[in-house]
Length: 226
Ligand code: FPP
Picture 1 (cartoon, helix red, strand yellow):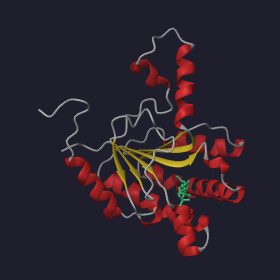
Picture 2 (spheres, rainbow, N blue to C red; picture 1 turned 120 degrees about the vertical axis):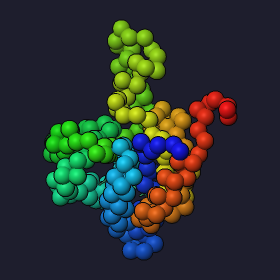
Picture 3 (cartoon, rainbow, N blue to C red; picture 1 turned 90 degrees about the vertical axis):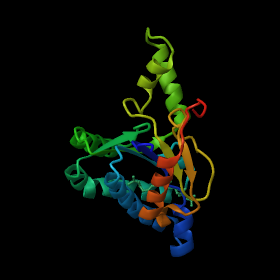
C-alpha cells in the first residue's frame, strides 16, 4: 500500500460548469470553491500532509479582465473569511508562483502564510500566477549565481516548492489530458489521474476512489518488478 503524502490538483472545468448550469463562467468558479473546501476536509480525513492546488497560471492572464477580477476577489474573500478557520484546523497555507500582485493582495497572502507558518496538520500550497517553465528558469539562474554544483539536490533548493516533497499523484478534472505548465519537474514520477467530471462536480467519493486506487498501484520508480 502506497502512503499518500502529497496530492496535486488541476481544478479544471469551472468555466464549462458555470456556462452549462448558470450561464456564467464566474458562477462556475464560485461553485468550484465549494469543491476545494470538501477536498481539504477529505485530505485531512486521510491524513494527507500536502495539497497543491493550481488556482491561477501565468497563462490565465489571457482571460477576460472580468473573469480575472472575479477569481482574485474570490481568493481574497476566501482568505479573509476562512483564514481563522484554517488556522484553527492546524492548516498551513503557502503560495507558490510569482507574487508580484498589488501591495494589498501581497500583504494578504503574506499575512496568511505568516499566521499559519507553524501549523502541522496539512499544508495547502496554492499555485497563483504560477508557471513551471518560469519557476525552472528562475531556479537555474539563481543556482548558476552560486558556487554550488548543478545537480538535482542543489537545484531543488531553488524551486518555489523548496522543502515540499514531490506529489505522489496528480488529479486533473475536466476531461482534459495535459499538464498545462504545472509542476513539470516535481511531477516527474507522479501517478496521473484524469477525471471526466468538471471540478464543481468532483465529490468526496471521487477523491476517495482515486486515493484507494493510488494506494494499490505498484510504483517502480524506473526499477523492474521484483
Ligand atoms: C479552471 O477552470 C479553474 C481555474 C482557472 C480557477 C480555479 C480557482 C478557484 C476555484 C477559486 C479561487 C482559488 C482559491 C484557492 C480560493 P477553467 O475556468 O479553466 O474551466 P474551463 O476549462 O471549463 O474553462
